[in-house]
Length: 255
Image: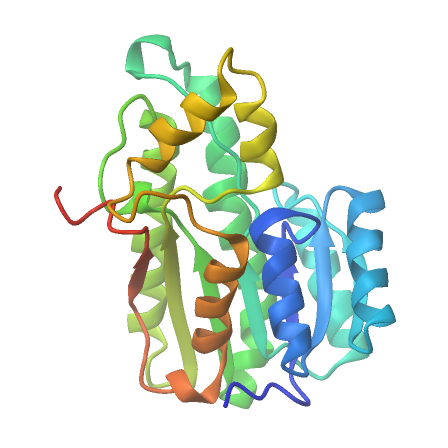
């Protein structure tokens, strides 16, 4: 099950957190993984660890908010491989605030990465997929793309857009051999989240309050999100397209 031997995958935001876990999961299943990230040092480290563990990976520096870099990244991959098999649009940024303390510039910044970057990179990769009639696109959205979260107006706006983009993409190309799905995580204990928790006067209390949002009573682990991505990337999910898979520990159950 979940054998990706001979497949190529590109994961954005793969230098840490959920993206790093996804890169490990796909590489562990046999895929050649391109580790895409704006952080060259961390991305090179991730690719190095994968190769040291017997997988095949390489780092590609990529700022998804730069359309030219998206086109160049796809051209580089296509020059080395005939076509990409699996694209995971994971790179994303956040913002805290209501409309009263969120500026248009904040929304523009999130939109440039969370939506426009996903659009530009997908467009750069999809044509060879269509020619082969084969390809999997997995977009990392958020539970904030399914339900509203307090004081996250810009973030939720972009993540709802990600879910809509995914469903539209899936419908447009359902008969072209392309599958597109979104994954919607709840709160996940990543290095970024742990660093934010450390800024609180009582980190443990802050963790417990954030964890309580999930019905299960804890945050998710990056590996748990990566496991779902691995399933969606595999042939076992051949009948799954256009879905927004909620992996939120029950956050949305009572909403």
